[in-house]
Amino acid sequence: MTIFSPNRFKTLIFDCDGVVLNSNRVKTEAFRQAALPYGAAATQALVDYHVARGGISRFEKFRHFLNVIVPELAPCTIGPGLDDLLAAYADAVEDGLMACEIAPGLAGLRAVTSGIPWMIVSGGVQDELRDIFARRDIARYFDGGIFGSPDSKDEILARETASGRLQHPALFIGDSRYDHEAAMGAGIDFLFVSGWSEFHAWRTYSAEHSFPIIENLTMFAGVD
Image (cartoon, rainbow, N blue to C red; front, side):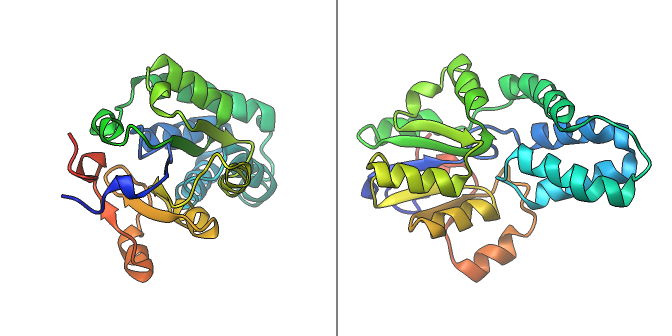
């Protein structure tokens, strides 16, 4: 199934979790494990907040947890602070990112777009992303750069466009509402990947905004 030719674009931009790696559940479980010292109610509230805000950095989510959720749902609980939560999360995530599935069709799509720069623009920590991608031997696909937090997706897209490294017309391939919003804010076309997404309202949202949808990358230009 061909949505449109990827070769009409000068840059292809990929989110990581749920697009390149089947890692959404890995990260959701890592948030759950890190927050458990604050009790079941606060932990579930953090998980719900995380899932509803796919693509936002862990720093923002844990700050919200400590500043808003904990005072409301676990006000008398003494638990780990921000640095310890981030460390527990990172420890829980690393093994999962090394073991989770790489998107089928990724190598085939790279082969048919060999003249087009690829970028990663993710809410994940930039240094961690570069390390994981190198260790899993997929960093070589992303010759346009691998970018992540602490900069937001909006900041990365604006910076890379201003530098000239991100050439338009461009396509952002993502799996969350924030991916779509970031793409629209930067004047970039958007393609939604549904197969691993945790954005439960994507059908309604996509109908409202009329963007194309694929289940996985093998459907993009019919590559294997």
